[in-house]
Each structure stands twice: as C-alpha cells, then as structure tokens.
Amino acid sequence: MFEIVSMQQALRQKPARAGRAGEADGEAGREPVCDEACGPRCELESTGSALLAAALTRENLTQAFRRVRRNKGAAGVDGLDIDQTARYLVSAWPVIREQLLKGTYRPSPVRRVTIPKPDGGGERELGIPTVIS
Image 1 (cartoon, one colour):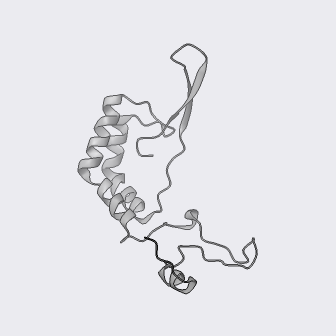
Image 2 (tube, rainbow, N blue to C red):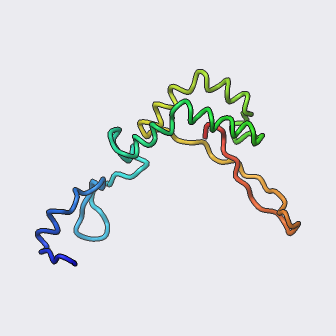
Image 3 (cartoon, one colour):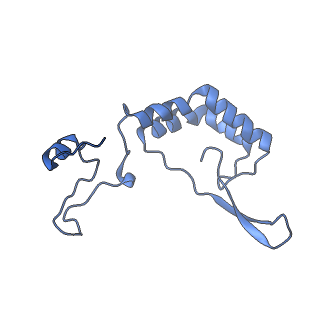
C-alpha cells in the first residue's frame, strides 16, 4: 500500500530547487531573488517552451486571427483595428515571435470600457486587449 521512507531517501528524491537564488535563515532574504520579471521562467528546451512553440505555429495564429476578425473586435490601447494589425505584423512578427520564445515579450495594457449589463441593471467593466497583446 504505502511505503515508508526515511528523510534521507525523501531528500534524494526531491528535485533541485527551482529558481530562487537568494536563501536566508529567516523570513527576509539577504540576497536579491530572481522573479518572473527578471527573465524567462524556463529554458527553451522545457515542456512549457515546446507548448509555446506549438501555439505559435502559422496555422494556429492564422486561425486565431480569423476568430478576432469574425468577432469584429474593437481596437485595444494601441488603436489598431484588425486590418492595421495585419499590416503591422508583416514586418513585426519575427521580432515578436522571438521575444515570446525567449520569455522577454511584455504585452500591452488592456483597454477598459464600461458596457451596460444585459438585464439593464447598471454597467460592468470590459477589458479589450490588443490583437498582438
């Protein structure tokens, strides 16, 4: 049923520490630690990066772009409509793709608008991202 293991055996099975550089005795660290904002969370060979690379295939992006066009979405904070975005991506996509794969891409803020609630009882906030994000 269950196997009882010693603390030594458990520690040998424990994977290496993931990502925090500074270690201290108390609650506050003495050295700066590495957070997500400092750089990519995983190396290019990891499963997450493989999934990202699969998501960034031309076929997947074309399908996503068609959905945005079909939904007749409003422009985000960048002010670009779907046709302007398509023209922009012709030259900008290789750089954006590389940033995404490296983990250095930083998306644009979301445009906030208020829309009436369906039941007529006030308004609610809606976030409109840019197509490129």
